[in-house]
Image (tube, rainbow, N blue to C red; front, side, top):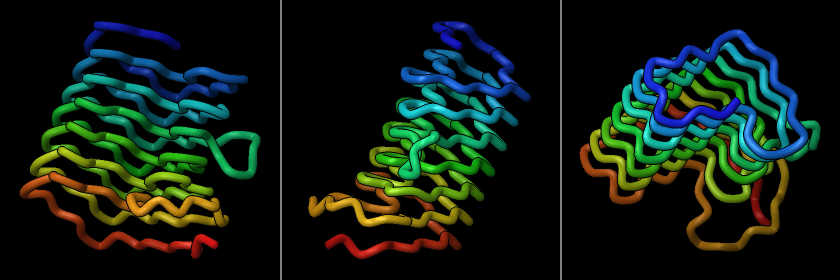
Length: 171
């Protein structure tokens, strides 16, 4: 599903199985609700750039690969976005909401290889990351110093609270 500049979208209760590309792409779709979807894709589950005041809730995103989808939820530049109670199996990134003022990332279950970040809310001032479970389930060979399970670099006034992080040691 591909939308641009369409506000108040409701993408709910769907099943998506795609061979590549995006299952849901909603660019500049303010005040939209993307909830209760089951998504199987090797690349992007949900991409929602510039999705101000959007809700991404109760989605299951995975791939047929054991390592997971490349980017489960990718929603940069999205003021006051809510990413809540999603179950994600991620190969590279679980939730990316960088440059998103007052983002709320809560109660998500993120597992998989997680080559880069489980949750990335860098440059997202006044954001909240709470009660998430993030687990790197297999070694990924990444030795970069900026590989994190949660990355909130340059996110002033933000709160990280009651998250559970499990990290498989990189060899």
